[in-house]
Amino acid sequence: MVEPNISAYLQNQLRQAQELEENIEKLATQRYQLDLSLKEMQKTLDELNKLDDNTPIYRTVGSILYRVQDKKKLVDELDEQIELTKIRLSTLEKQQKSLEEKYKELQNAIRDRYNQENKKGATS
Image 1 (cartoon, helix red, strand yellow):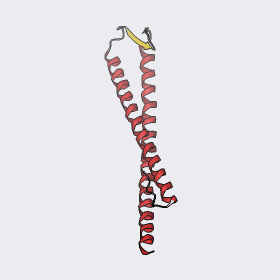
Image 2: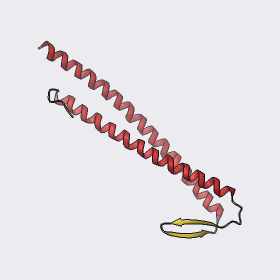
Image 3: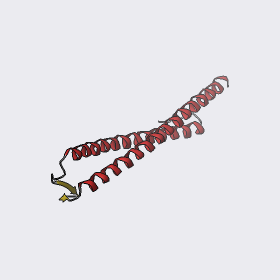
Image 4: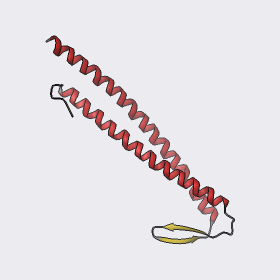
C-alpha cells in the first residue's frame, strides 16, 4: 500500500522495507522449525542413551523401518546432526538480527525523508 502523494524514492524505500520484513519473517519461521527439529533430536538422543546396549533399536528411512545394528554409530550421527543444526540456528539468528538492524535503519531513513518531503510540501 503505497500512497500516491509520496516520491518515487520513498515508494522504493517502502518496498525495500516490506521485502526486509518478509525476509525477517521467513528467517523466524526457519529458526522455529529448526529449533523444533533440534529439540526432537535431543530428546531422541536422550532416549537412546537410556537404552541398554542389548535393546533393539529401529530407525525409519522413508516408509521403511529397519533395525539398527550399531547404536554407537547412530548416537554419533545424531550428535553430528545436533551440532550442525545448532550451527545453522546460530547462523539464522545472526542473519535475522542483521536484517532487523537494516530494517530499523531503513524505517528511520523513511521517516526522516517523509518528514522532509512533508515540510517541503507544506512550505510550497
